[in-house]
Amino acid sequence: AQSVTQPDIHITVSEGASLELRCNYSYGATPYLFWYVQSPGQGLQLLLKYFSGDTLVQGIKGFEAEFKRSQSSFNLRKPSVHWSDAAEYFCAVGARGGYQKVTFGTGTKLQVIP
Amino acid sequence: GAVVSQHPSRVICKSGTSVKIECRSLDFQATTMFWYRQFPKKSLMLMATSNEGSKATYEQGVEKDKFLINHASLTLSTLTVTSAHPEDSSFYICSARVGSQAGGGGEQFFGPGTRLTVL
Image (cartoon, rainbow over all chains, first blue to last red; front, side, top):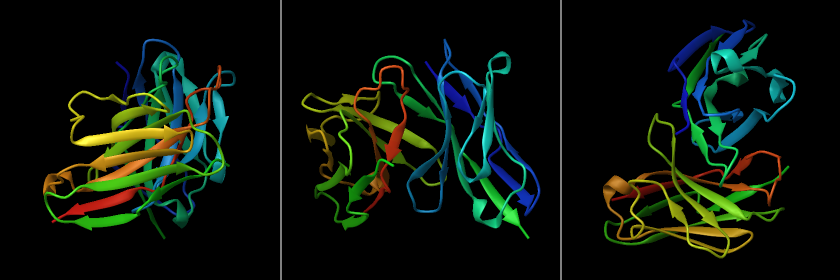
């Protein structure tokens, strides 16, 4: 069965500082990988996704993530955080077969301080 | 981009009543829709996978008779919480996948969610 681990429940960064959110996955083959962001009381917005090819993926709002097969990781990065980036971030792994079921991590809450 | 709507956004009901939540793909046809439940400060838990014209596939531990899912068309899926109880109070989110994406991956587009409160 596929699974996702986000080891950091809560992260606080200063505005303008760099950010890295960790994600490790478990899947029998090369998975589909996603990062979503959720603002309070809202649905999820896709930041970026990895299907195949270049392991460094660029997303919206200046985010990027790198797929590292050897580490089973898909960490999310941003060079300079803005106050509006404060939200909950979910990493997710998708199966390549069947209904392409997606499994979410437990999320990392990002707080941005001035 | 692909837009998914949910209705209602919030609903409060009395214990023992049934509540229906609609999920619509507004600008694309979704052969597969997913229903998730999100507990406070928790991740999304997949409840069921819904395919147009066929019975939903429920995840282990999800009561089929309590959470009725209907996917009658390529743009609409409904979740009915039957005989709701306070423990059913939660944030319910649906998602839809665009048609059949051969090799395209399982990207899902999410609705804004429905906050259910059962008194």
